[in-house]
Length: 172
Image (cartoon, rainbow, N blue to C red):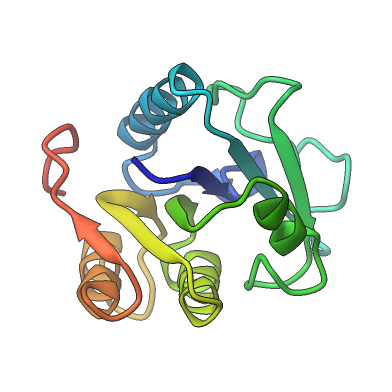
């Protein structure tokens, strides 16, 4: 188990755009909530990151965390306006306050905010862990969401993070 669970951008407006739901959302929410329970049981911090932009204005329904997430008011919230969750936020200070050396990542979107944050965290010296299929995205540029996720997990593995087998999530 890592020092902190970092859940990125599992917000209403990220998980649902127009009439499309992000890939394997139900399974991901179930898995993330199980991880949240485990971190709380071990009294380790859970941090939620929320993205803000024109389509996700602060305070809007689209900006809110997905209602199925096991968020509690004692959890830390980080607001960001960039794919890198460290950029112009207090994430690094929050991690230092908790003496974090290792981070478990989950959330959306694989090729944007997860990729940017995982690589930046690696550059800062954090030990990163991602469970297979613990991130999600939409199909894009002729690739299925599963193909995109697999591609990024392959890039991260052994370079920027340890990608762990995930028997709780079916191979999508």
